[in-house]
Amino acid sequence: MTGDGIFWLFKVPPPYTDVAHDEPLGGRLFMESDKALRYVRAYDRLREAALSTSESVKLISALAEELS
Image 1 (tube, rainbow, N blue to C red):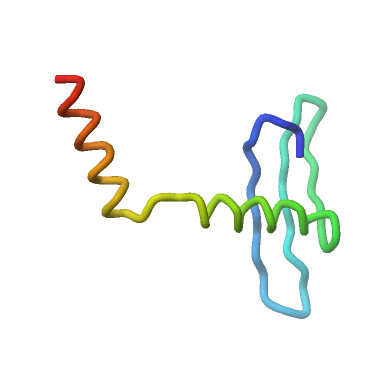
Image 2 (cartoon, rainbow, N blue to C red; image 1 turned 135 degrees about the vertical axis):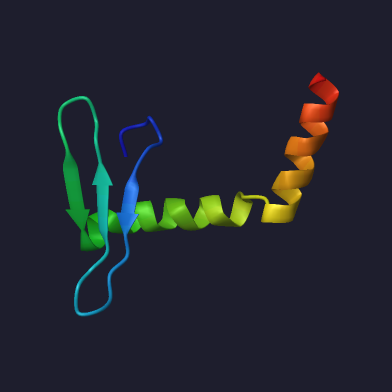
């Protein structure tokens, strides 16, 4: 990964492998199979850490109330 944190992950059905897309300053990168695996793992970690929809709404509402 390039370090800016932005990537796209394309999950496709077998027999194809997942594809990760990263766009660093030097150009576009498409990675398949083992190289895409670290992006799959990063995505899984992000999903695990993310708030649920209702928790997100509560947090945003609380912050909006605090700022008004």
